[in-house]
Image (cartoon, rainbow, N blue to C red; front, side):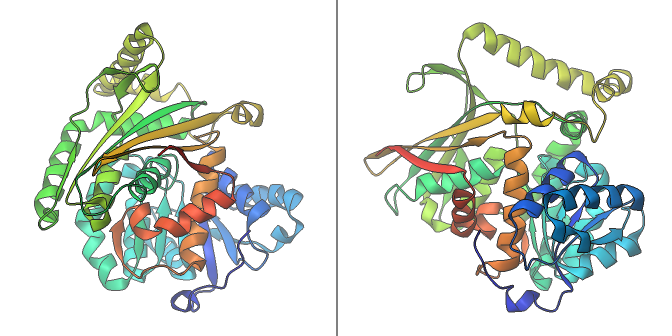
Length: 399
């Protein structure tokens, strides 16, 4: 584990990191990751609504690392603005795993933007990210707070993987990158609730996205676009490529818009790989079914009852999880194939990505750029190095 000292800008805070939502499924896994892997000098705390549950989490962590008996416990609730303010002002970085973020995320973003506190979350909800940019980007720029959404499987492997690929292509030329996702794992109740919430608000989400595009504008003299994804057979992998309706391609393109190294004309496409055509039909039908069910209160409530928030796969199930995201990059007469790979995407590796993101912001020497920004914008190569050291693989398969 990389040993570093807190940046001078963060030295005035009592704590380096607070995990808000530590009693939840993913919050607990993230706490366990820090207990196992954080530097012994890390000053961190657990935050949540229920003190008894926080005590139980701390006791579980003590079994992993006896030093955790000194962890501070902060009682905080998104409905209590003062408690959220105190959390934001106590730490250099706040991790939040409390979703759906459209329901429970804004209070902490607002407090961190006001306090100049760095923030990381696990959201995959496009409307939430766009709303936070519209409401708090300017304030975060002024305070220096780095509000970094999507620091789990949504969207770090894709955002950093595309950046890794771009660095292996020529500079100053049009570039095309496509990402292809394969994996295995189970989802938690929190993930299901976030997905259903996002699907139920698609019309509102489209409206907010338009508002952001109008306010954000385009990078001067450069073009950033999609590759106009469609279902097709991808010979390179011997599988069908199905466009993924996730936030990941949006995050990649926003990183590209902020960095001229992506070239004067950058296009990105994002797919999940499916081996057989009948599986494509099943996948499309399943996503369509969840989307349709999310539109009506009766069916939406039934979907939300399938798994309760805080529930998720057990350790044995997580141990079987895996992911590979392959990228094909082309530009300036060169073609490169890269891969980002790791274990259980939804939880084991997500806890790792989230924990390392927080430590990266707290300790590593990074450009000071406040705002609502992407993982690649905020941390780029520094986070990639941390994740590689922690066992997530960034590889060039063909150059």
